[in-house]
Image (tube, rainbow, N blue to C red; front, side, top):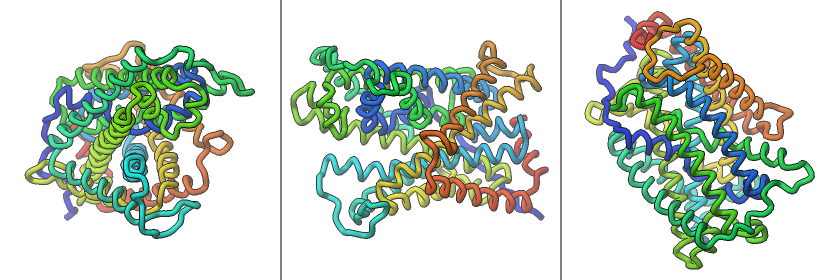
Length: 471
């Protein structure tokens, strides 16, 4: 008799509108706005950077629209897993979901490396205890300990229930928003419009090349709205509202990044911008001319780490749970905690893997993000294709959030997803390096082994039966 990978427990619907919005917005904000804004302005110019984010945001919004319609039509845990299974079947669904799990895992691993990095700005010289060197960077024991402890704390918070994780998300978002409002208000009263020059890139390649160089960053900075479909079975909202909240979260993220670029460019002139290590905290210091202002913005950056970390723990663990529940991963990962109703073993797996990232030092930040970014874009492509297929094959399927000109939007989203994927291929300025390809291929090999084992043990018929509720 085959082992039943289904859990007798069910996920519980506890997330309200504010919880869902904080979850998605917090995931997209993250830490990138603290460390990347200065480089964005230098590469594209102040206005060029804003235009790049608006254009990139529009592309992500089109992809997000396909997610919004599908999330309202199939509000099931796993999101991409449910959509791609219904549209394309067993193997494509596994590929899509396994790819997004790599993306989510890359973010939580990134945060476990980002945390000890940013702590150095608050406590200079705290890193002691030489361990080894990786890619020319010295890995130190206290630095590793901070990253590992942070990861284990986030794992524990998610283990004890999504209510706790959602409460943490809302509390930390408040700090980010307070710092952001102070920053933008200070820029309006104390900033100088003359500091915004040059408005566009002054390089020989021209303004367009500068804008394109920023567009490459957009997939990584905007990933996070797709956490909403992953937790769909825990959202206590009308199905139509799920799609609306998803779109609102993307628009808020576009507005946030654009305003941060605007305020930073008004606060710092070209010379000050080039000399600053963290441009946004430096801009805050320049506007308020007091040490606490810079520290507040660094704390807001740490808050961004926490919100992103928390959201992707939720998204990744639910994707793992969804695959296991459908018999595509070992049954042990479909277990829900009897009291907390969380996918405990999936959360423990996320925690174990991400806690290892600090052992590879700061270079791991780039390797992990780039490899995971390709996984995210692959998932976007599969979801866009699933959207188009279901619009053609099942035009009468109930869609509480139905977008206008759906087929056209789906085709454009598919093309955009494919174009984003090409940015990672050899020949592109942002192509993956050898180490990054090694990480991606290693993950693919693990996936092949897991898929082969689970298909043999449970069978496609069992998966079909498990997924019938979303058909």
